[in-house]
Image 1: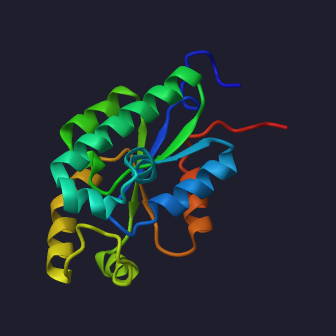
Image 2: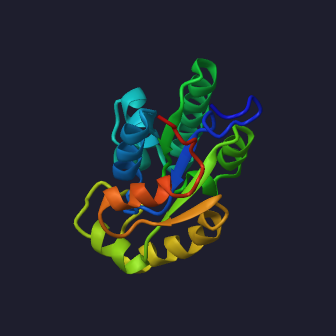
Amino acid sequence: MPPAGDTRTRKPIGLTGFMGSGKTTIGRLLAQHLGWHFVDLDTRIEERTGLSIPAIFERLGEPAFREMEFEALERSLGEAAESGRRAVLALGGGTIVQPRSLALLRSAACTLVWLECPVEELLARCATITNRPLFRDEASFRRLYAERLPFYQQADFRVDSTGDPRHVVERILGLGIFERVIA
């Protein structure tokens, strides 16, 4: 067990990165490996509203979505803190761009891990996906990526998310942010 003041095992882990970086896939695998609770913010929003993310953007607009995202984040972090349950959160691609959301993550001592992936790879991954409300064309995709990049660079850790998701999980585990279990 870590010393009483050591909070490494209690801090939630927030996976951030651009659309297509693997936040949900890697988050689910990481949580499964650690035996932690997994939360996908987009799924939480869809379950709560009964609408898909593209439908929310289309019907209500991005500002309404960002409000719902903040509320889902606040609830998820609150539940984790109250229950003492360790959690891996797959954040939305724009979550940490929102000042309130980033402040909330920081106040919750959430460790932010940026799943970094070259824009060419992200484009290839997202080209065939139709449920990305902010992916209109290659030029706007690249522009949005460039706008968000400075925010992703503020994460506590950067992990290359190209290749097999299991290897990405191994890279995250190798960061030294999780307690070691000694048998």
